Length: 314
Figure (cartoon, rainbow, N blue to C red):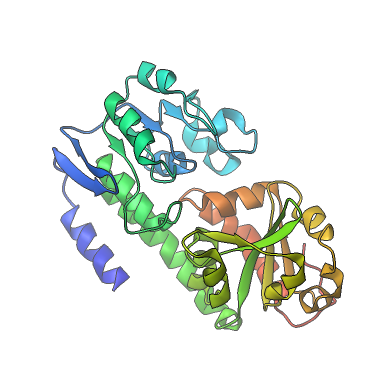
């Protein structure tokens, strides 16, 4: 069904995108009279989508990682010599945003509330995420297609989505051992382990590869995209694959987890440790980071589930 929908969209957008156009989001609608030229990204990862469409934002939000112009290695070629203004990290600088005189403000991955939306919408037409998904839970391809539409680059967005989904699906077909195995994307923060729910982009990617996310994770997370739990429930990580995610050194974080070395997933070598750059690619999960993620992460997953505890996962 997804392939059919994309094929229809490709046919419909084989001609120039017609303006004015209107796109609905969780706080209402955004209408643009013409193709926007000055684009500000207030999402934590939306800048990658914008750059993947050949557009350089005049302002963007810094998430984490201390990267030049908040642009990670996989996106730096697309940014080129542009020098966007950083308009905030945890808090947005509304004055700086207004000074950029944007034609549109994009914030699908921002998690903005209605008050933030209203403040931004006074400055320029603002795109929030759809009400169809939990905060920070918009699928990467839906995000990219929506941003492509609002920027008048829907045909390019469809091309990007088709190419990457084809590659992901091909890898899934080449690795039938992935199918049906359970997977946890785990973290250790402030003395508590945790996992991401099936609505998060990272487990959703593993599901496309054939893995399943334990239903208990969704129960624990409720309407959030992650859940923390006590060390007494470390058995929740006894899955076929455990990917430790960290903003720094994932192995170091995992080594601080009490009782981890007594758990079957440790003894049987079913762990993968995702460090700063690869973790960034996993967390951004954008049209620019996915190729890097696939190149680096898939070989590690293959080693982790090979059934040989002596295999070293790099």
